[in-house]
Length: 459
Ligand SMILES: *Cc1c(COP(=O)(O)O)cnc(C)c1O
Image (cartoon, rainbow, N blue to C red; front, side, top):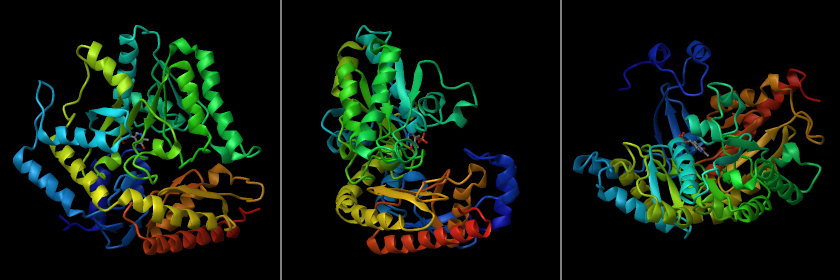
């Protein structure tokens, strides 16, 4: 497998593999980084470099790499029954058992699940399901779904439409009809003249303004990530979500929590809605449900919606070949059991989450850092030109990318979203490994600062 050199891998990659969210031509010139193996929180590339993965792959490897229990579960299920569908009045044991276990670990309003193959597909299911619900309720005009700018809900037609990424909307005629957006609850950019708590209420009321503008009788649902992930780990003020809940309740609108990142322990509770204090009607999940070992996603369907679909719905004309894939479900079962056995949710809530929060608070002293914060094991810092005024660097300098380049070279994976540098390490990380990660992050910030000073970019 590993017989090729890095240059050979890169040549074949550039010749044939179109990567997601990638400028194909510029990557082909530079050459991909080829990751060949991993263990615990560390990756190895094709040159033998050792890299601390502070992003859990792509927000998903919650239990870390190399967990034999997941490998065994997949191998066992592949031998026993690699595939059977759930379409024609059939089911498989892993899908049934996973549905049962998900009903236990999710908040009590959730007793039913609809499986998909990914988070994007899960959000497609959300669109189909909330519109079907309102049809069955005799209010078919309730079809508008409200989301937020800079949200990420996936990359299918519906996922990208629900998302609020202008770059994605600009390609392919999105959003699809019936999806509108409000501003995100991003205090540092939009609310610094107010306290965080005041701003949280102001931002939530943007939802009510939009509902009134669209007409409450036309609004089906509001969808949001408890904490925006791909948008830059934007942690809303604590006042935000409870107020969103009150507004949705007042107008009878379904509340959807996209838990694809925040699910399965990431925030120090099983689900982000528990950390943020709200009670959704529907919940999308993916990523951490299998710790990324195999693809799986789905929608937790609260009793308000499930009851109507089950009792009055007849056939729901929707589903995927891989809805309830037995191998994916077997791996998810092993993954959730491991999260329980290792007490990873408690580990994040009581130990490494608070420890990371202290370390991030201390980063605010750094000359380049305008703000730094975390929730559980999601954290962000923002690089600014003048920290007292919060003046950003000109976007064309792409300082976040400069910093990310240092991270790669120093052996730590951080992601840059504009000038927000973000991390979401595996939940198995220890305090000693957080110390190691923070030393690397500080070194990268110092190197980025030195670049900015040398180039005359600092105030
Ligand atoms: C990653 C992500 C998705 C999309 O999941 P895919 O498995 O990539 O389709 C949806 N919502 C959120 C919040 C995500 O972070």
